[in-house]
Image (cartoon, rainbow, N blue to C red; front, side, top):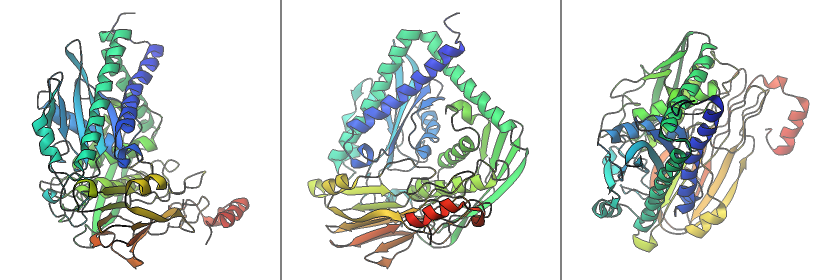
Length: 535
């Protein structure tokens, strides 16, 4: 066998080694970071790309990060990266998703030749803007959301560009925390270069490059085989967002999915034009949601890489909610609109793959941001996405109190939260009776109450507060969510200054039920009553 050939056994070994590179990058990032949002919640993602900017392997981190990463690499390639460079970016109109997600792209050089790219993306707890935490509910343009970074060399030829770093840190709250998290990302990317060099030493340059192609071919072949099992046809669905933070008007998202042989195309014609508020989503985010759903309705065990994406096409009108023009505000698009795109694409494919599509989950990330306007050591910024109900599905109940759809983060443990911030957790538990009834019940939402022990600014970006997560196949809808400030209900998207002693409560939605409730097993009904899941 020549050095450029890869037999099936070697391919499986090398595929796992490529994935291990991405996973080890993630571990370095998580264990080296300072902010609880990264080290505790793991709101970060890492991936390995080849020299042409094609995804080779990713760690199993955040879906909305990972599916959008190819856009970042494509953009950086236009800037002629050289060995020893590290590009930093967050601009949603130049390869980013929303401003808090800071991305680093590094050429991976072995013996002076660029063989691939390492990419790390992490949600930083603050990147400037009009409110602490950089998640303002009422933003009308991207300039209000934080510091905007087009791709720029943070490291050039192996030397840190201190001018760029100083400019970045001068425009954010908690610069010490930001500096530490930036260093963690740099360390993660450096680890990828070390590990790729190890693989070249073990297998040889030609075989590593051949394996890059082979793993993509393998995934592409498996996805196309799965798509051929779906019935050809056009499948349509429509859903809405509950306002944009400026108005409460419903904002429609429409899609037509066309399955044709071993390809599937998604056309979002009929989706709303871009809006004044911040729920606009860059095209990369919309694509990421589509890719996620296709993986779910085919075989989620297929190794995720560029080969998975090749049979999928996405068309979105320019100037629309899912493909906005600058300087549209977009911070909510990454977190909330991505969830609704996921819901609407699942709904479109429900007839094509009925056994693979669950009832709707909570359909929101329940973004809660609390921060002070004080600078230096007196300042703080806390950010959390809060889990809820997963939808019931054929053969099983929905999970309780989990992240759904486009996020995959952990929670911030109560002990870590209270040690790190002037916050006190009053209540944290499952929300009884919030899952939709069905042959298979929807999962329960969560109740989380936090008292702020210092004057602060609170921002909430949430959904499913008036449109419930839908049941499927005769299942009932899950409960809608609710936001409370000192017991007073507040809108789904709101930012307000609050005095010390204020309690913020987020009651997250439950998942929809699957199947006729009358068909539910008697033992399951008994367990529902015992576990507080029955009304």
